[in-house]
Length: 451
Image (cartoon, rainbow, N blue to C red; front, side):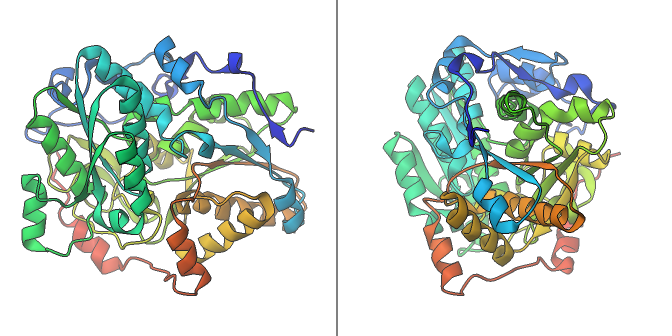
C-alpha cells in the first residue's frame, strides 16, 4: 500500500456534514445570558455573521461549501492520510496506525478549515474587522491568514502564558497583518478588571473570549469569531473526517478507533463527526476517543451543565461539560487544551456514551511526541501529542490482545513554534500537573443557576 494516501484535488469536499441532522436526541438550546431563555438568531446578530448563525442552528445534513472558500482550501487540501509504518514497527503492534496530517496548512494546523469560511461569510456581509481570542496561537494564526486573504482587519487576544511561551506565533499573526495583544489586556474593561485583581494573571481562554466579545460589541462593523466549541465551527472541520473516509476506502480499510485531542472540540469533531452515522447504525466496535490534559480535565472530571463560554459571563449559556467559567488552568504547554468547557456537540455525544474520554499529564504526552518525531519525522504540537499518546496506548493494547485494528488519529498541528516546551522536556524540567479537586470544586460553585 501507499504509505501516504493522497486524494486528487477534485475530491475536495463540496459540502460540510452537519451531524445535528442525525443526533438521536437534540442538543439542549443555547440560552440568553440575561434572561436564561432560548436564544434566537436576532440575539446573536451583533456578535456573528448572519450566515454563520443560520449554520449554527441549521437542521440540514449537508451545507454547501462556497466556491470562494473551496478555492482557498485547495491551497493545502485534501491533506494526506499517512500510515505510520515506522511507529507500528517500533511498537511491535499488529494494529494499523494512520494519522491525518493537518499540519500542512499555511498556519500549520487544522484551524484554517473554519477560519477561511468565517472570514468569507463576514466579508460577504460587509464586515470589515474581526476580533477573536487564541490560546496556543494556532487559531489566531489561522484567522490572521484568512483575514489577509479576504482583506479584513483582525485583532487577536492571546492568552498571556502562551503569548510569552510562544513568541513566534504572534510574529506569524503580525506577518499576516493582525494586531495581537496579551490577555488579560488593558484594552478592554473585562481585561482591566482581571488585571486589577491580579496584575500577574497568566490568563485563560475564558478571559480572552470575554475581551474579544467586548471588543466586538463596542466597535462598529466588527464581528467576533472563534476557532472551536460552536456547531458551525465543528461542521467546517468535517472536511477532515470526510477526506479520511475516502482515503481509507482507497486502501480497503475502515477505522476501528478514532482519536483526537480535545480543548474546545473542533479538531476532534472534525475527524469523528462524519463517522457518527456508522456508530449510530450499530457498526460493532467502532470507538471515538477524546484526549485531554489532566491539568484541564473537562470531559473526565467536569459535570454536564449549562455554563458561560467566557469568564465575564458575556456569552450565551450552553450545556456542556465544564470545570466552571471561573476555572484557571495551569500554564501547561498545550495552550489549545486549556479551556474550561467543551463543545456542546462533543459534550452531548459524550453524555450519550458515543464518545469516550481520557486524560494524560505532560511528561507521558511528550514521551509519545518524541517517539513519534523520531519514528515519523514530524515534531507534533503539544496538543496533537495528546492524541499520539492515546493512539500509542491503544496500539499497545492491540499488541497485548493480538488484535489487528485500524487506529486513526488527527495530527492537528506541527510543533515548530513549541520548541521551548521540548527543551523543557529534554532538560527534565517539564512538570506534570493534575488540577486539585478542591480548585475544581470551588470553580463549580460559580456555575449559573438554570431552571
